[in-house]
Image (cartoon, rainbow, N blue to C red; front, side, top):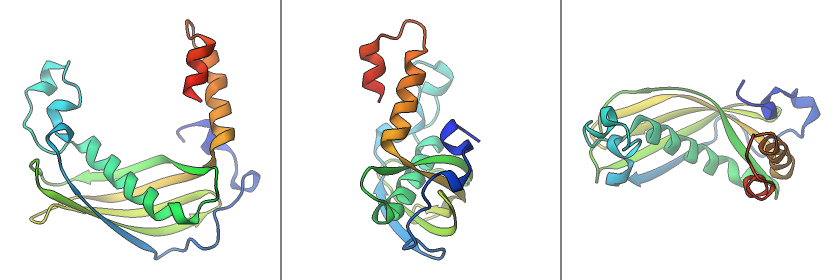
Length: 166
């Protein structure tokens, strides 16, 4: 489990609205810009900077997370959001900048505040990625309060900087 927000049993938090059901799907297409390719992920790392300009695995995963968040959005109350808490995705093929990537997601399960998705990405030629992703629905005010409390414990972090985090 990734963070304190996900360690609490679902019974302590509010369950996701019942309008979100397993089997619901969402699709989103995205044109890959050059700045989402591998060399741009860590340009200060010479080993990364020399890699081919293809859609970076991390950026593909974030795109999948975004599409899952889009599916969730209409089923959240004001002040709620979701955090990615688990990713199990294979990156299967390289995608060039300028190509369109279409991501398809399907809600597989809703358990309390945890939502599990099947995710797939295709670039019009190849299936470029597929797997599973889990998101946890949180109340932003509670999450941000915990984050600010953590930031306040970081040596050298000013109160103003800690407040920016929340």
